[in-house]
Length: 206
Image (cartoon, rainbow, N blue to C red):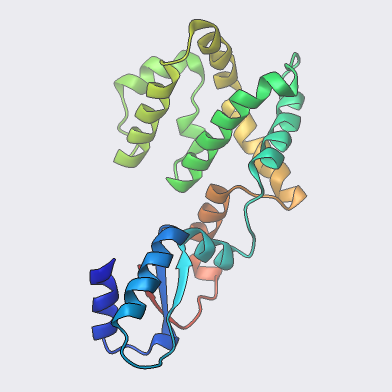
């Protein structure tokens, strides 16, 4: 972080026209402290944003809290499952599914291909040619967490697996109607709409 601050200071760029984008607020705090220690005279500090703050600004919305998102997920799940469990029992799976949907959108994965019916799993395992390296890694991460669950949880999740494709589509449609979103959904919206988004005339340093 010290080297980054030094490079920006020595770049000669006008700090008023710079936005420094960092992974999180903690990194932003350290960067600001390091840059401040290097500055010898009064000057404007560059704007510092997290990646999420930048995408939320470009997308014009912020992610809802997890409890709200999981509750909305449960409502859609109830519509798709004729025998849904209670919300208390669903919450554990809801957290996993929400994280999975978030990863799908952050990796820009094709959800319709990723969520094959369970009967086609072997076909997916033997031929991943239609996926890129990031999407393959996403599948590996997902299954590594899955196999650590006990058999009862595995069997229940296999039933969820069959619903994931329809659930993903219906859930995102429901969130759009409600004016809600999770972070990956916002990232994907921005990435897919770059040609339509007005980006501030600033120098972005990532």
